[in-house]
Image 1 (cartoon, rainbow, N blue to C red):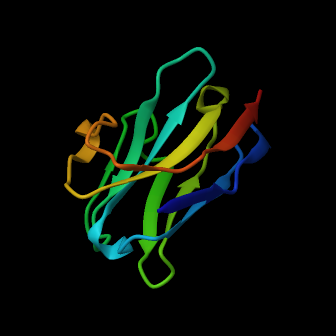
Image 2: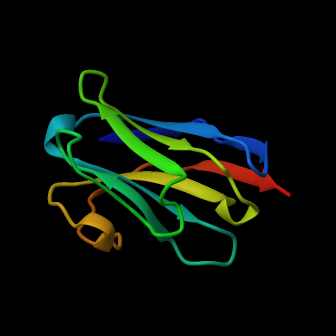
Length: 124
C-alpha cells in the first residue's frame, strides 16, 4: 500500500494550497481517508477526515471553515483544499487510511496506512 501526498509548498499568510494524496495497493473506496499534520516540536494532530463515499466529513476546530476535504474514488485520491492559511498551519501534512469512522476523534490509532507527508510552510 502506498499513499503519496503532494501539493505542499511555501505560501504567504492568507493564501491557499491544495494537497492531494494518491492511494495505491488498497481498495480505496473501502477506507476512511484523513489528513494529519505535525509541526516542528509538536505532536501529530488530526486535521480532517472523509468517509467512504464522501458524504460525511470531520474537521479539527482549528481548520473549520478554512479547509475542505474531498475524495475522488475513481482516481483513488483524497484532497485537502486549504484557504486562509495562517503561520500556525505550518507543518508536514500526512494522509492516512483506516477502515472505521472515528470522525474528529481520530487520533491516529487503528490506522494501518500513512503517507510520507508533504511540507506546508506559511510565512507571515
